[in-house]
Length: 424
Ligand SMILES: *Cc1c(COP(=O)(O)O)cnc(C)c1O
Image 1 (cartoon, rainbow, N blue to C red):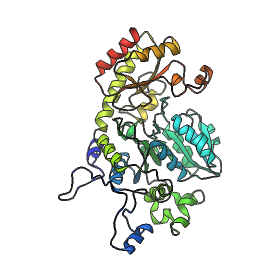
Image 2 (image 1 turned 45 degrees about the vertical axis):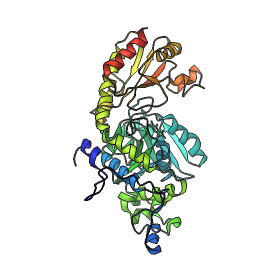
Image 3 (image 1 turned 180 degrees about the horizontal axis):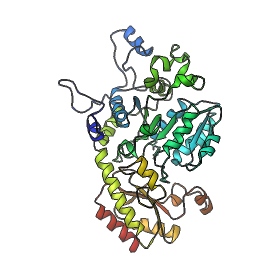
Image 4 (image 1 turned 60 degrees about the vertical axis):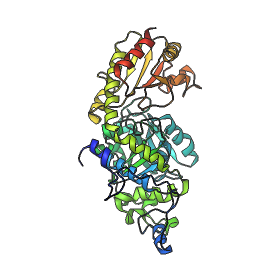
């Protein structure tokens, strides 16, 4: 199975003779065994299988396997949300007293998770500009640094992550690079091919793609050699007393240790599991992902050009648009295109932005992005409402900024809708 379109349909689940063609929804909390000895083997991580859906469920695993194949990874797991995926991906390797280097251009929810909540857990973060020099980046590392984090296409700033620069710095300091690949999806970017070690997703966005389910996923490349940096990663490289003295990196090797530990410890203790029914819906979204992503990119490119040439539009950010600040980096890492999200400013500032949005008929006002329906958000009057105009500018959100998430509707209808709202 070489190509991604084929994997989106077939990877992860192969029905045997007479079995259901679609993945079965195993809507069961628990699983039955013939003997206590059989069950005991599961608790010892000696045998593969399921015993309680708070830790793992077969439906989820079929879908995780599909996403794993799309990213070219070695192991994967679903989580209840994108937030849970990023929490687990970092907390699996960093605990109280540790430190993480993160790009400052990341999703606001992730920034808050790191900068507020995970600090309360005792983990320290240094945020670096995605445009920092190699020297500045290297200077951010400390002896207790355990990971580097970034976003392929940052939500909402649309900054493109320079994988090679960040991977080089991470690996020269003996730590993995963790990348949130939500906006690009594996259709447009495969971070493992550029040096990332762990990939996370909010599957709530393009992967589900239909406004139906909140979910997340973590994929391991299997390429990071934990045992070569034994002192930094005691959780993976020394015995886990809460699991009968298992050493994950020895027992499950480089390809399986990260996800096994994450399931056995973090899913066991936090229980941020995705409902099997949601995993089923997510799988439906994945089947058409390449078709939708292609259309999102085509529509967004046409709309970015339309906006760029419109006299009432002050500025346009779209990394797929020639002349954009990130066009060259986007071309390098995402030759097939970036995503469907554009940000732009209308002339007349905050008031003009609000008026414009109120006049849209197809584009709906919603906090959601990266979905089949076109939607718009004015960050200054919604997600960033509490900030003053100066504070907005300081955090890269200008008062006139509109985030437009271009859907898969007919592009002429969308352009007519935007034109009407701008001109009337
Ligand atoms: C939405 C989003 C998240 C959070 O995902 P949820 O599924 O809403 O928890 C994380 N990262 C990025 C890039 C996102 O866009």
